[in-house]
Length: 219
Image (cartoon, rainbow, N blue to C red; front, side):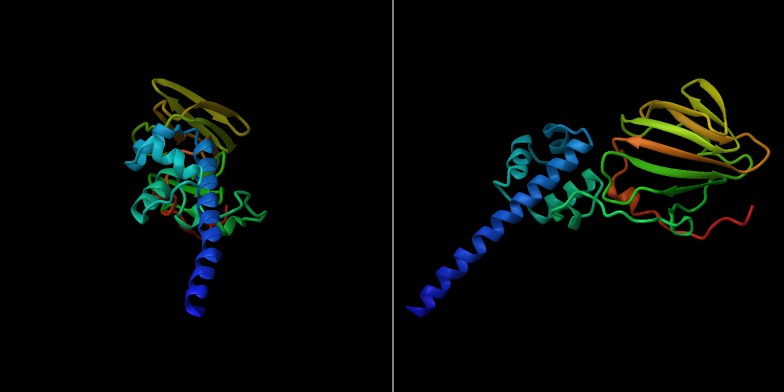
């Protein structure tokens, strides 16, 4: 009798925890999906599931397999662990210039991440260009979000489709990320720009490529 009673009490104690975990997961996924302006169908297509499954998941009515959670996290640009965080608010914190996560320099440009994962409603990057440096030889696209480029230092030429715009310190330009674009330093010194993108277009695999870096040589 005692063993049977113990077994029942364990089930009673574990059931609310399991339900709460599903609710936390569901609310987190819905919050991230809406921040990225994804419909139920779009997220389902990205994860190889169905819109009805995503809907049940967001309402805490079902759980998900490890494989589904990995796909979900990748599509939303976060880690699996971040899907279970009860608070979507990020802690306030200072990011020192010397601690900015960065991609390896390429084509005379170093790109650094200012936003802290998990990304919310926007993502922010800083780019430093050597003389003649650029984002690459070709124009590129990424998703269909709103992007703003602000020139913090130097003279930068921004190509949008076939149009070209020369921007100087303090100038900015806005465009959709689905428009083929490219940036190049055409000035006589180093240039620095900031990219602000809303909603985020980067997936977790891309964000994971950013690592700590050492500052460029003193100017």
